[in-house]
Length: 495
Image (cartoon, rainbow, N blue to C red; front, side, top):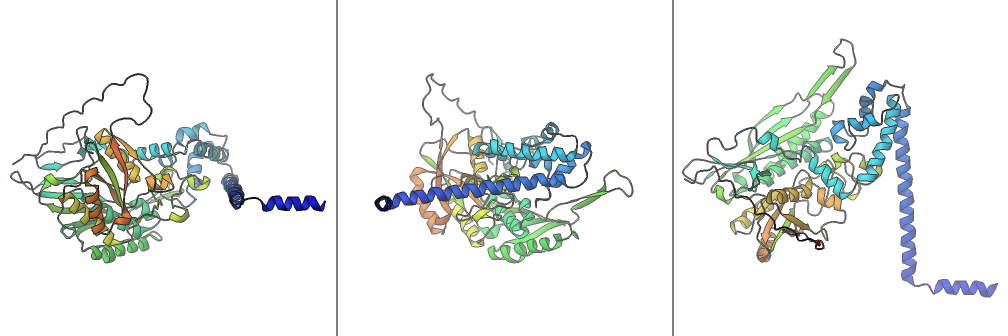
């Protein structure tokens, strides 16, 4: 017996250290899996328990009942049918029970099944592109004449296929020159649900990154118009409005030498009504979050030097991302989080408020980084290094890259190596920044320009355009790609 025990000890002692580490890692992963499943089960159980409280409600009110319960988890101002794809009114009808409580329980199961079955990168991308904030606005743009007067140098539509992806608007000052004015808008209202000051700073930052597509000479030439909206008098909203105004008017704009000579406010962003229109009936109230809509405008010496998201079809080009988050990938309040509000419960994707190490909302942490970004784009444009430009905002870099590909009728090869460990946070975070298109032969010069402006930690190569599939060749020959249609003649006189 003693010899057997000594043999076992010798056998254990002979196990290499690397194998021990492998065993420990496996046990650690197993423990994490058990903890995750347990937490998931507890959250799921609590969700079901919500529907066991209170008296049964009539079947005709189950939509309102489920909406009320879904909104109690810290996500106010939600539009239920839009914000819970693929759960819609039709899905609620399909899951309807004899009363609202049973219907709610059915819906919890349906959300779980849909989330586990469909939450992947492709599905997340489709949901983001279908969100009203990201989706094309052609139906609104084409109802009017965009070139009336003949002084429009840049309207919403870009490229020969006329996709509405322009970053800014540019008009000519007259018929006999190339000078004019550029305008761009920035707004990040959903972020105000979590951090009103950050939402205001991001609105200013987005307006500036949009305006960078126009050849503005200096940041000091830019003037801002601020449109403030809030539900004055509603508990907590006055304080949030104060925080937002202080962040922009007393901190950010003075740090960047920006002025706000004009603006307006709407401080009655709330409404209250009786459900049945009868005196004494129960009342409902709608309250909008603090909102700042920033319009940036500046004179332009030569409107012909503008940049658009239209990619060059020349070979040997590449895409760079300049991210002012400096490596941060905060997703709170993002379109991705809005499209997956249930994700925080099952742990597959970040919740609306963000979670983990990158919790919180995107923010302009360093105003001087925005100045350096503006000067980088200006200098690179003057040096002829930039072929295309598109800012990163709603939908993250994924939406920006898709818009560049759509308007150019090109494919993209995107490399995530070194960009971020989590593809969801990497592609869908909405930190300030832009995607630029340069020639491979200009890489060293562009990298030097980035270094001169102190943005080495913010810039990286992420991919390249492509005109051919990268998969294995098919047996049948494919037809040659059709030539792009000729570009529409510009409505702007040449003088």
